[in-house]
Image (cartoon, helix red, strand yellow):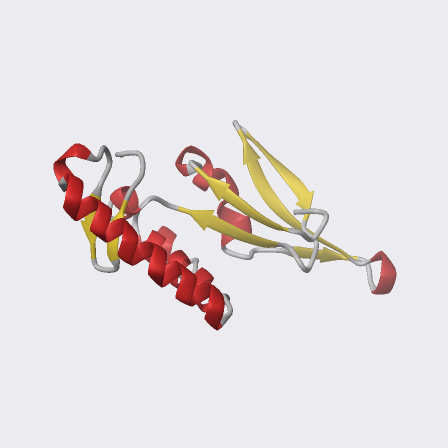
Length: 140
């Protein structure tokens, strides 16, 4: 938080309460001009510590979709929420390609579909149908 970088945190449900003041943007300011520092309280066990928070600090909190409904509305209200899927990332990457590269990718997709139809979907481990076609990968 002190360096002003953007961080991505995952699997943090056990410490959400420790970061209550940071997530609620409860800050104290000391000094002025170049000596100005912003502080927030962070709970570490039974102690509460003032930590420096750079004004450019940003936090991205990743929560798995399957536990999203278990999180309290009061906690979620502290954040802007976005739902991203593999399809979203695939579409974004596809849009960044040149027309020639997109044509190649479409050709590869057609050939993969033909391969799947020829050998039968049941023989391909991790193959799942979705809205954008077929994902082949490790089953989860």
